[in-house]
Image 1 (cartoon, helix red, strand yellow):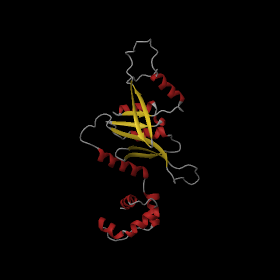
Image 2 (cartoon, one colour):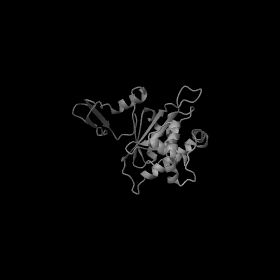
Image 3 (spheres, helix red, strand yellow):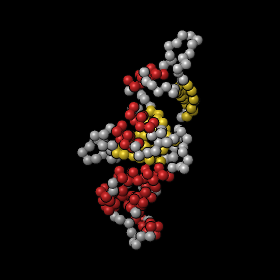
Image 4 (cartoon, one colour):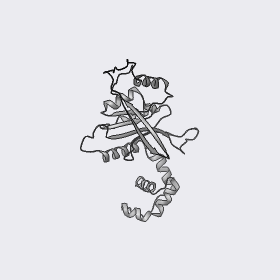
Length: 232
């Protein structure tokens, strides 16, 4: 019951514990009628604090919610390959710095940006890095028809193998700060040194450039793709 009330309060725009408790208290009669409660009262603010601070397993709650949203997105038909985008990203929660620490809680989430649904999220232990957490997030997810999108942190061979074995595809963004990996990509996609008039039948590069207008400017976005999977 308390979880339901907090969700309703959050949807109403309340984001802190005290305003949530006041929101519930002002609507106690309606909430009691909705859930057929014996008393038309809501708990005191400190009760909310104790419950959410000590009585709820946050990781288990995330798993239950993720499973629920995954079931809502599930379809009887097998999704077409590449038809679903699953974004994986890590962020540090604002206003969540534990006592004695200098950084907030690092949280890694896997979410469907087109649907606005979080399928799984996990707080990273300070002894874990983001790569390990992403691997744990991926295991319970069905990636059939999905393209997993991640930043340079996720551009790892082991994670790529896991995604492909789970019937998904991956799209990693690599930055110039990752010098070795970036140099490997440049070498792979550099034009082959061929004599004039000759072409290499072993390559299948395809290049496309799109023009996007927004924020008062035109931006060209070129992309070159290849089906070659073997690195030099």
